[in-house]
Length: 295
Image (cartoon, rainbow, N blue to C red; front, side, top):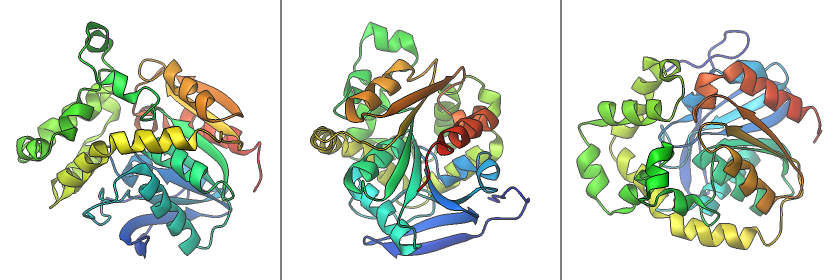
């Protein structure tokens, strides 16, 4: 799928082997570096509408997470600490010593671990629409009347944790499954274009794609241990907590305040897929936050 910068120029895809895994990524723009980390079940294509707003001022790096998109479907290493180390190694490979990090969904969980494990490199952190394992994520997966009624019931956390069954049941039905899943979490389902669905289905239908996705969830309890240990030393860099009012909402800010000391917040009346639903407003919030800190 084609991704373009603010000039309308196609952003060329590249690959690099770092931390024992071959990552697929794109780089565009000029200026201080910004790392954009996507969630699940998405790829770096998720950021295509936000990217042109950032490239006039920043060098933007958009990788596919280990096992997702066109990155290598590694056999192991799906805990967020390892994935954070992947991204730190990629930024070092590209020659970036100090950078801003934006993460959404599982990309936010990886961004948190990146900021916690590589504090000297992360200038600012944008933490968007995620509850950390060990800080309430598991509670959202419980079968309770409140969770079911909320439309934020994260039943899939438990489903994906079961060995082999998710791969067997989803295979051959990727378009139906992911179309419903992604649009269900949006307030404006029409904002999710068929180009995005095509891209996600292509990647998660590839050999090993479903397994890699499920392995991220199968590391949830390991992530919880890592997050609780990391939180013993709160983050001191500026953190912007970005929330969807109808989805993660106030819990997004709560998590940030439990793990960081310098937190500001912004929320939007859209669904979980903010970069699809309100990319202009979202990018403006990023740029406003970035303007408050210089590497």
